[in-house]
Amino acid sequence: MIGPVMHSRALAVLGGEPAFAEPLHVGRPNIADRANVLSRLNGVFDRRWLSNEGPLVLELEARLASWLGVKHCITVCNGTIGLELTIRALDLTGEVIVPSFTFVATAHALQWQDITPVFCDVRPETHTMDPASVERLITPKTTGIIGVHLWGQPCDVDAIGALARARGLRVLYDAAHAFGCTHAGRRVGSYGDAEVFSFHATKVFNTAEGGAITTNDDELARRCRLMRNFGFTDDDRVDYIGINGKMNELSAAMGLANLDDIDAFIDANTRNYRAYREGLRGIPGVALVLHAENERRNHHNVVIHLDPAQAGLDRDTLRDVLRAENVLVRRYFWPGCHRMEPYRSHFPNAGLLLPETEHIAARVLSLPTGSAVSASDVATVCEIIREAVRQADSIAATKRR
Ligand SMILES: *Cc1c(COP(=O)(O)O)cnc(C)c1O
Image 1: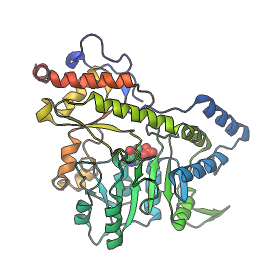
Image 2: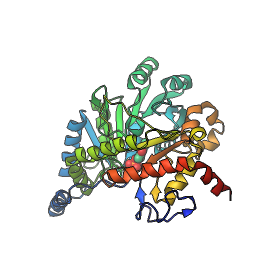
Image 3: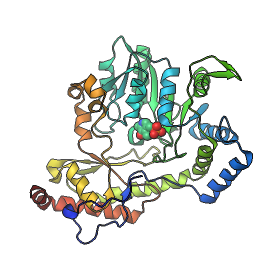
Image 4: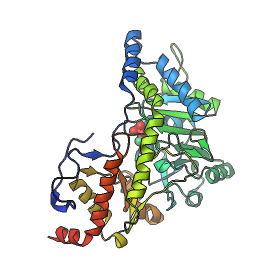
């Protein structure tokens, strides 16, 4: 976590001291009931069993599979390794189509194994992959599609599944944002050939570092399990190339305790999301990314879209104003993977094919939420945004000076 940083007060809009004495972060970890965590940790120390298919990892895998409604759950040491393992277990090669508007790990997991990520565009309403854009990018070298359930909004899994079946492609979903989110009433976790979750500290459900691969495919699950443990099929027999992707017992203890409290975390996020929706209402040029009301959402990512023409100030200026008040918002996922290395050098003109990605990436901000953020904190953040837009002309004058 970034330490306390005091930003220039020049752009402050509320006057006096910064609105928050302590910085308000995006992605401050949710921490389960401490007695629950500590008693589980004591069990780990009593058993002196710290890793390698320990009892808590097995318990967590069973509980997650049942909670997510999927046959197999294979925990891993982080979400990125989970993506890399699944990509290899699915035998993906050549080119794989993936959105550019995601955390860079989604693309890196491919490039790390010399598979070319081919970047598709996203839909403006949901920010998830546009199946029409995917279809246009399929070539004879394409072997798969990786969709990202961005901000916890599931991809159009029906259209993507149909396209993949018609073209003989494998489908993997990066579900790092979508723990507990539903599509057609069914929790994310069993769509496509497999899905991968991240349980990083900053996610709604965390194990400090960790993740999981979920699938209904028995053979794929078997391969992922073997590859997670160096490819060992017996004490000293190795049948596959593998890696060390195991989750440890301390992380599993954290995960079991956090799973006990997951409803409370999601309730806090839902309360904050509704408070943002109220607090931002009617501010010119500021639109909260809204979620379907008939599906379950974790509301872990609260995202606004700023139209600079209507608001009178651009996204980066609003970010500076919020920072001056100690609200450390983030520009997820600016500037898009296609403008990061090595992809920028590989595809210098990729942006021409990604108009929505370029448009959205320059206009969104992620706002603080989570169990460490109260409804009154949210009201204050909304007030700062409202004042920033009201004072847009004088802010522009301050910036020119
Ligand atoms: C967090 C995240 C990851 C990476 O997960 P780690 O557990 O940090 O390796 C991958 N994809 C997306 C979209 C993420 O937000």
